[in-house]
Image (tube, rainbow, N blue to C red; front, side, top):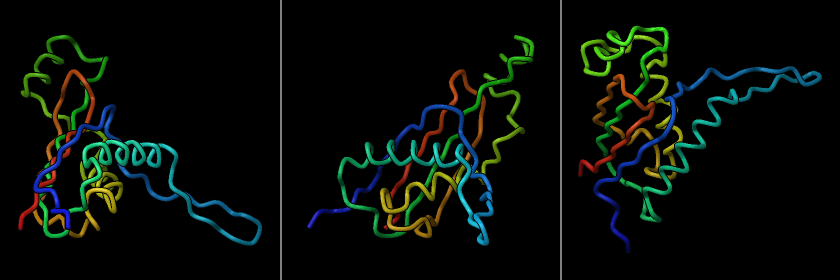
Length: 144
């Protein structure tokens, strides 16, 4: 029997995307719900990166600690001085995406790839910072 991993980490390239609310469409007499394209695309990218990181190892089975670092780029409209201050950590990103929505999308995408279900996340640390390159870093570590 394979042992579950104790730690796995991966990087999701590109601008972090918050999980969008479901959209609804009328199809004749029925109303159907669907996931917005931007959300579905980002969750698929997360799945690919998570699968690569897991390298075929078994899913985490018990409680896990999850650390997520979201990196966004400073707005182009900012002065070079303000951008430098942001990149040095003197200014924090208080604009979208909302960290809770991004975490929800990442957690949902990791279900049945990294862990059985995101309810296994017992300790979570999330931060959002400015960087030269937009991305998200995910680390998952077994607590048991």
